[in-house]
Length: 319
Image 1 (cartoon, rainbow, N blue to C red):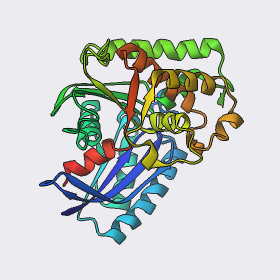
Image 2: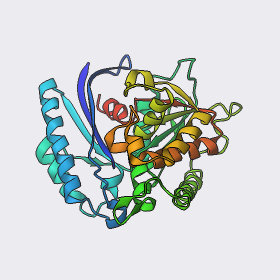
Image 3: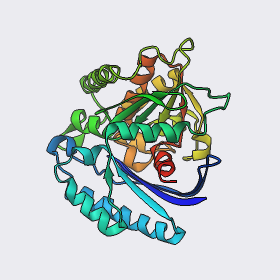
């Protein structure tokens, strides 16, 4: 066993996984998994820079994670940064801060690298299991970007596109710094146009249209907070319960109904949903709409929801 620590810093959240990994058996024993909403990508789509307050929120989370890593004695640490830090002019400020706190340099990975980590994390435990046979189409809906990965035993095609729940919320639902609550039909239509354009772009590389219809055989596997939150709502959970959400199957009809309700509700109504993390209240509508659009494009009648994602893929990469 090798004790590893993986950190995934995205546009909306920063997450830590400390685990014992055995590459010989494919076993990953989780010791600590945690997440904080830091909104590192706050305003990046508009300004091209990481905001000072967003950096400080992220560094505060890094200090907490550094203590956990020390206490658990991880032998190897890898810090991966994704969409927001790829786009930011001042990302060197971010890199210096992380190095001072954690002692490792954050790797600002490409969208294709992000896609490969997501695929490995999501499918490693599914391969060879009859209840979710491959091939797979993995979709990772993040805050700033969405990754599409198609493959079986390994990745065959991957593409990252700049649609995410934070990016689209800030672009289309924020007026004078305030989120429209609930969004207008025109705002929803604008998000949908952006999503459809991005899906057209992704489809140049990854087969999407009708890929998940029964005759085509791909299982749609959905990752990240927008997908797991929609799943928690569909399951009617009284609180967020990872074990119940992991590998649950949510139908297209459920996703369509939940998306409509989220886009038609107010901030306070969304905040009262038991599984809703406070940091997702304002961005979940856009995230759910991305998921719905993907299911409609691919012909998927259901999505298999995975709690294992890029974070697990990062852990395996250093095991």
